[in-house]
Length: 110
Length: 113
Image (cartoon, one colour):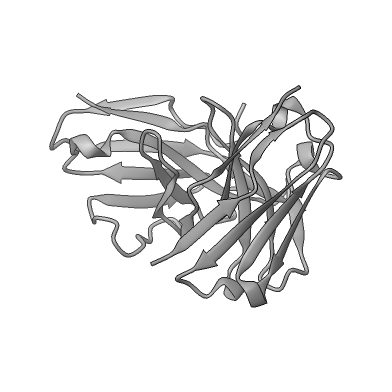
């Protein structure tokens, strides 16, 4: 059971907007910034969003992150077939003294 | 371009040891916390350990405390993970990462007799 809770799956059609949630607590998302990672099938994870809403160079602006209270969200607009991947949220947990990851959300583009 | 290249994985018997290495380039290695994250076959990501920029602070997930040691050599832009007393449940792909900048391609560790 992951400390951060994500829906196991999400789906959308090309061009749609999809949102993936990440629910935590006051000791993790509530007091620290959240990152998001994309893992395409058979590949290593890639940094998609850091510090709640910052996109590293090269990440399309179709991807955006936000945080409110003890939850974070990843939004993908203009969904494309190549967005089909697993998405993970992560942050530092002050009580565990370690980083924690969400269980991952498998995004399917219908 | 950020590059992180892991090495040192392989097959090891339960109770054995392995040392993973990670060579970094394309960013100022000495100014970032560095991490090891693992992924068991068919499972999600699990954070293993991290180390502060100057190497003076380290943290571990409970399941590896006392068995794994993370270290770094900023002069060589390198990160290490010494893994002792390995168990079957440590079987996973191990990634070297700066969680805000980039990830390596991973190295597979298989613990089996």
